[in-house]
Length: 112
Length: 112
Image 1 (cartoon, each protein chain N blue to C red):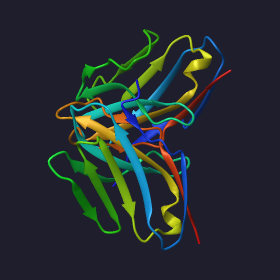
Image 2 (tube, each protein chain N blue to C red; image 1 turned 90 degrees about the horizontal axis):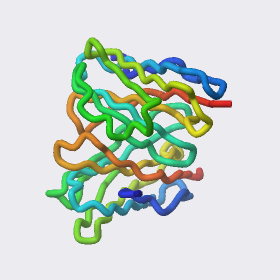
Image 3 (cartoon, chains in turn brown, blue; image 1 turned 120 degrees about the horizontal axis):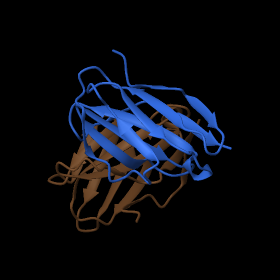
């Protein structure tokens, strides 16, 4: 069962504009959410996270929003840069739960 | 400092062969995770170690899969009698805590 879903397999934006990547989850026991970024031939690298007690977390150009009632989170990148082009994975975990669930990923392409 | 390393990076096995995939975690990281990533999908949890103890192996798809971490550092994922459906990228991650995991580059296994 797919408990974490990223329904957009790809997204293309122009350099300087905002990129919005979306993620939905079904398990209400999840209480910690993460975004990972992956370049080809490399493992995923941690980007930003948010606890369920918050609805927003910001780190430089990256902001993650969490809507618990809708079981939805999003990653905003502004302004987008060509170096942001990568596959972005949404992940979710329960408290003290070592079974982290990942979405299928969204491939972001930022065009110069 | 050194990140998580995995070897080999690529492995081609004939159906029915046994394979062993190695993971060297970041020094001092207590937690170690193995994931399987099929093409076009996100990583799927296989198993989790805390030091040398395998605390969760619920994600292992069959009894052909076996993982160990005998001294609490290096880990090996072994797949016996490989099948074509085992073809995937196998990712190892280590963590000082459960949430932020640091991934290795993965081993791409192709079973022919």
